[in-house]
Length: 424
Image (tube, rainbow, N blue to C red):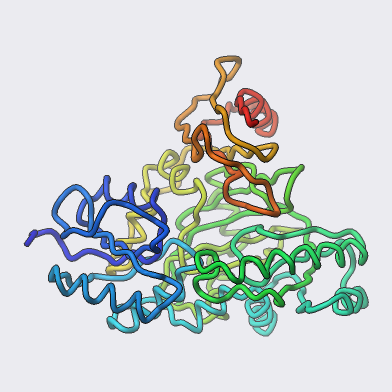
């Protein structure tokens, strides 16, 4: 057997994360993935790729028995459990509990996964967040106007990010979008890949207060009731398209002085504690309005999308590796503020459905320092638009350094205009 340290169990991640971890740190992790994610074949760690175990992740018992059989066969003693995907957090918690390894509890994870429950728990602890009510039909939408001013947000209780999220200017628009959300949820609820943790309910929606302000996210480390901020990112949202869609991430999103003025570590500690999170490396989404912080989501995993790549280019910190370190009991080293360079990850979205013919960054008047270009889709792929599908319409990302003294939005617009996408 290899003399390498015991690997970490990574539960339910995607092929790109598997590739990143395996190529950067061979033997560092053992992956338990859904059968829809294919990455090589099962083999003992020690080569260029770690052990990849496939199982029906919607079935916790079968997945655990498959995992237990494989690690037993190869004599693996897992050093910890890590997870990068919201839909796999409950399974990760269950696996960790069965193996007597540290991970947030199932109850805490479910509190994070259910937006209605998280808002109730926050309001009980006087943690600022949008007002929210459950919605099961048109009468609930109409009744909410009695104590909630428009615009409001209609959204599911459990889907990730801004999927099926709608900003509604009046009750009639809210009712129309409620029916759209419900119909879409009924389809997703029966999909064992999308709904592998069973949290998507076709009847479960919420209507919440719309809070206008600057939107941010951060990665944090919570240990012993104390919170350390690992990074911040400002979210630049798309003006056109689905509500809440991130156009670009700007890292760092705020400097240490602003973090301290907001007392961000303390209020994240309150928000995480209210959900039952104790020791975890997590992510928080929040809005700043009039100097106050309103929480949208707190979850025990690091930020996704292209954020790990943006962070790496900004300061050299590999958030995926740091999360693996944390899962084994190590405290990741976060670079000091003066090592973080202003870096932007611009997300590229399709403008229509169809078959992708080509995508490229055109040679032209782009003055920015381009650090990375990655296309998630390739010619021949079928592209579908929201609200039917929120995955394929994201075509890739471009990471760059902003020019000093020039409006960032103008730079992002210029760069976006230089990206040629042909869809037929």
